[in-house]
Structures are given as structure tokens and as C-alpha cells.
Length: 300
Image (tube, rainbow, N blue to C red):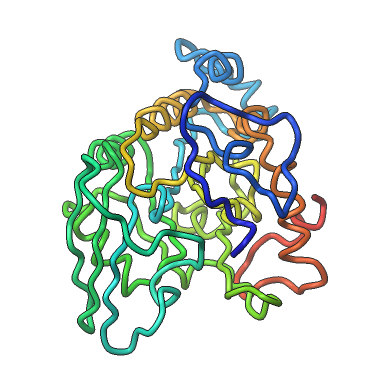
């Protein structure tokens, strides 16, 4: 899909002050390679103190509500390549969301990789983002953590069995849990992530998203709930230090009882940055087949 960024962000932090154009959604203007500690410190409550019960109540969040973390899979935690299709599978879209990706990653880039065997004889090579094992263990220990992927269960379930062999994650959500957008002119079917699905899994009211965070690399993933998003750069096989910085942010958010959405909006302004993408994807369309909050989208 052409609106998705092709480039991997490298170098110093670059955050645009203006929303990017839809047809030029540059990685450098939406995704960051480092979470800026000064911005983080000023945007979030102090780690040494919790907000008072009165201020928490005023914000609509009860005191000490645990943070729920939803993690994307592909190009966020891992990058899969070198697919060999098996019986009943004829295209990459049978495994993952349609995005612009290199088909084959060559050479040894100093990152860990393994061969994934799927049912039906399909295989692929999975490259792990630097520090992903430690990151998943820390997230599972510190927060109620879910994987939320637009990939199919056929592909993602055996992959997660390897990434999370002890089943530390609170749950796994697959393509069937996303909101499908079908019949887009000139585009493959797309799958949106509505965090109300995570809220229900976590035993919260369907629209109680105040203490839920989505970590993802794909702009489409933030269309339903842009104020809950933590954007990260695409991972395509090169080692980086993104995950420890994401964990730092999550721990800061976790130590507060406040609504995460104002803080994340101040940091990333995703609501503004994906508004044109929302308009293009959803203009004149009815609600997707799941429960993506179309009232919220229509306001943007």
C-alpha cells in the first residue's frame, strides 16, 4: 500500500511539527528512533509520586489502574522474510497485513533469526529485533501485555509459540480480532486495530481505553485510537536500540494512574498525523465489520 512508509528511520530523533501529507507519509515525520527523555520527563508525571486520588478521579481514571500494553508483531518485534508457501497459501497476504516490505533479507546483520514452520508446509525466516526476548519478559512481568497483530493465526500462532514459549503474555489477538476494510479501490484488504477488543480481553468496559497503550510501526494501526499510540520505526532486519526506550516509556506510564492519552498526544500528536489517512481509508464507508469506533474517527 503506497501510503505506508518505505524507509527505515536512522540517526537522531526527528519529529515533525506538522502532519505529513497523506501521499508522502514519511517515516522521519511519524516514527522515532529514540524516545526523547527530556520530553518524556516533562510530559509524564514524576516517577517518584503518584497522582492524587482526586486528580485521578477528575481525569476519569481510578487510582492504581494497571497499564495494559498491546504490542504489534511484524516490523515491530520481528521481521519475517524468505517465505515458501505451502498448501492452501498463495500470497503473502494469507499471512500478514499487506505492506511494502523487502521480499528477501540478505546477509548476517548481527541479529538472531530462526526458521518458522507453519501448517501446510509453509516456511519463512523470522528475524528478531534486538532485545525482543528481554523486552517481552519485562513487559509481561510489569504490565498486562497482549500481542495484537493483523497477521493470521496460521502464521502468528506458531511464531508466538517460539517467542513466548512460557505463555507469559496475557493474550494473543489475530487478524480475526481486527476490523476489516474490504474493497478499497486500488488497495488490498486492510485490517484496523480497535483497542476495545483489548479492553474486553482485559475485563474492562469496551470503551475504557484510558490505561491502554498500542505499540506499533504501521500508521493504519492508529486510525481507531490515535491517542493511545506509541509509534516505533519499522524493523526490517538491522539491529537498533528501540525496544529498551519503549520499555522506559511504558514503565513511566505504568507508574502513574493517569489517563495515558493526553500524554501520548502531547508526545506524538498521532491524532493529527493520521487524520488524512483516516479520511482516505474511511471516506464514505460504513463501520468496519468489527467495532472500530467510527464516531471517534468521524470527529478527526
